Length: 207
Length: 207
Image (tube, rainbow over all chains, first blue to last red; front, side, top):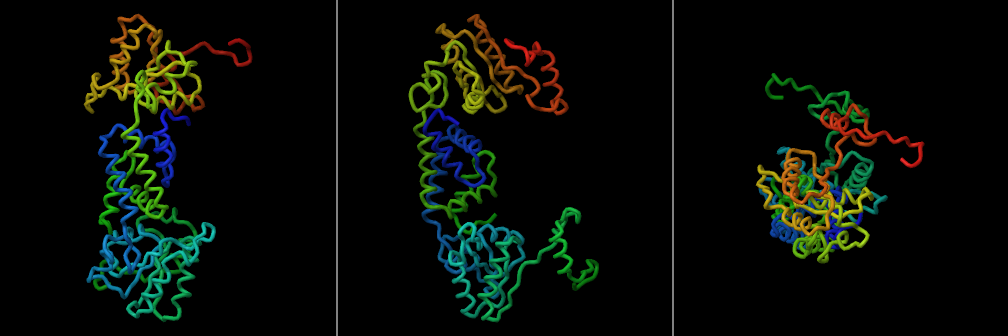
């Protein structure tokens, strides 16, 4: 595409580097900013540079944080006995939204993927082992995606954690709540049968 | 959503002001920039500010331009006799991609829309009238969207252009090339029947 202005070409190119943003969307965004008040572009630009330059990561779990410890690690109501291992900061968001987890997290910062050059040494694994070695952790829960890469990461971590004789668990795989069974893929359905749990009668108390 | 860092909240908020970007996508973009080399954030930020502060508009047609006249208006191979009126810079891109138009453009910078407070006076209409008054223009082609707002704009412009006794045309409305007829809406189909053109036999020469 030929652009009528070098500046719009540059802005489109930079927007289009972002994941999921193609050239057409990038052009739409750039033209929007051109029409919007000039403050919009400045505030966005400042926020992006400030984000990249000044965001810190929690010293304990690797989550994003403005302080040394993130809001979850510094919350006295959260337990360091259960540590949930996730690949990404977004996974912390996802689990926090369930409002059910009272432990703390450990953000690996990725997942083992030799094809994309992500080896165990480039992930926050050493700091997880340190946390476990300190003796406070009683259970590590893997909340990793159900892909070959996720399974490889879980396997690698389980081997690293073996010497400490703590409980190591993984989130259940199964049919999603609220979905028709016919849309669940075979592997997931097979797993949900294998890992079936005792039926809890909703009308009986104390389940 | 509760963000672990004030900086990520700010970046998400600013990204989410862009059209078609929700909070989830904004978070994905912000987290991507956090992981990407710091140069990416800086280049994007610089491009956005430079775009907003330094982009100029072509003095003749209102298209984006780095010079006084845009690449199309200053191209000696393009004719100022036919002027294609479009709402937006993006429409110039769309028509240029067809590689069939040899005239020049006039970018209105929007479309008459009283509901959104866009009145004729806030569009580049006066400069279009000036171009026509100068005597060089022989035909004005409306390439406006087929919405009530587009029709209103075309109607308003046609009234303004009436005194000059030049040809005023509008792009054909009809069934899209390569589409099944059953998916074409009734109004478009009716219009394509009304405006039917003589069949050109592809096997005969000199059609």
